Image 1 (cartoon, chains in turn brown, orange):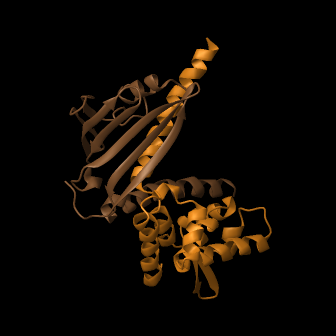
Image 2 (tube, helix red, strand yellow):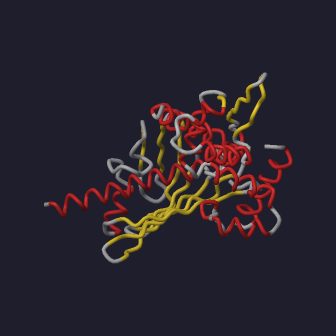
Image 3 (cartoon, rainbow over the protein chains, first blue to last red):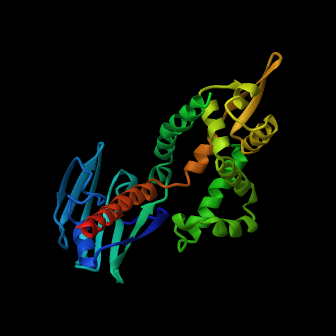
Length: 143
Length: 154
């Protein structure tokens, strides 16, 4: 479903010291740290085209449907969470061979650009939680 | 942040990230922002640049840390640092220009206190999903780096 809400996208790149096949498999293996399913308190994962996933962490649930799975080069799935406001955002991953390494690209597009989508407040709370502790203690120690 | 600055700030975010969707927000480096600065968003850029400059120095961050515990007098703020009082004064001026501290007179004494709002606006530039994916991908990358190191040791 698409509405007229403005959307934003993010692109991330990492060079991973492994073959595209290994990296592709690692992304879909919940035992490997860093993929979305690894840290979940509960997850369901069916990585095939039209397969669904669910994972939940700290009371926030995420749902999605795999739309493309082409080992070892490409994974695409939809992504719904409270931050996407009931809309399907899209996560696209590509894995390209680069010498002995793999250039991994993750594009998260179609994220509604609203205050809720931006999560400003949460970002700020997170920042504030660590901020005084880090610097406050430091200056006290110097006394 | 004054209401007109806040409005201008959001206008800048909209100009840079939404109207030009080919520039992802995480790619908004100083160059891109500088272009928009020259395009007339100077009010907001001044504010954001001021805040980011203010928190770029460890001494100024330590001062904010001290003031986050509550208002303090100038000498109390300056005491933990080895630097000259003059240098602390300069740091405080920069923080004040960024709107991160304010001075209030109480009787004969001047108390300096921390203002969080400009920092909140600056933190708002880091989208939650940007942080989320960067953290996940850093962990993922580290896993493969560690694995490679172990393989080499064998």
